Image (cartoon, helix red, strand yellow):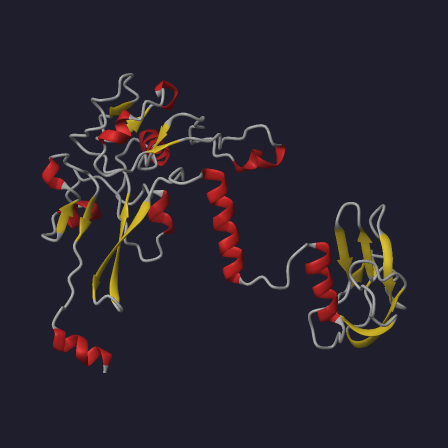
Length: 322
């Protein structure tokens, strides 16, 4: 490292090797903008210097075998006239991007990749978003409803499991014992909410070194061939219970935050102890707008919803459109 050059435009860059970044057609001498206070004088081992300035001997370098490219100037500013071309070469030649790609192309490509991996009906998720449409056919109103495991008090999935892999806990949770599950899928067949998923593929990877830091030590690693579902983030419940026991106190309202609750931007999900009358979840369940999904089946679901009230007056809608 050494002290950097004077900041500003007009510093002349001399291209010794076009390589991947500069490509054919770019001038061998071109102005660039630099604004750093220190500079790398010697490139990484094995890298080739492709351009330099009077003050920066390694203004651009490439290690083509490792796919490493570096510049010590600003190609993104207007003061570097050929910077746009350099960025295009980096994206299209080094990274392999296609100039015809748009955000829609990326989404479509991702969907096709997922579809090829999991197949039709074999997606793995613990919560789904149901959509309902009402109103005019050409201008329907869309209503969204998140559906996850209801953790029913009278759960129809529990008595049909031949190995007792889905059981009821003392806290009222519908638990999964993964190392006991043999994948008969009877529980999924008996669930009226269809929120259980069979793990068709081996998603768990505990051998790839780069994925080691990705693993959550508090979550059980599931193997292929077992049923999976929402657990109410039981690992977070256990962590809060242990902490409260260490401090000789009760679990505080709001101390347990589930994963879906944490990422919901509108705070539409509330979780807590329904036996605590002062808790937020108990107050919402006491609302006359509270209802359970398919409650007429007598499953007694713990997960419940609050009805949304709308003014369906047609005159109001006309005024809104005008």
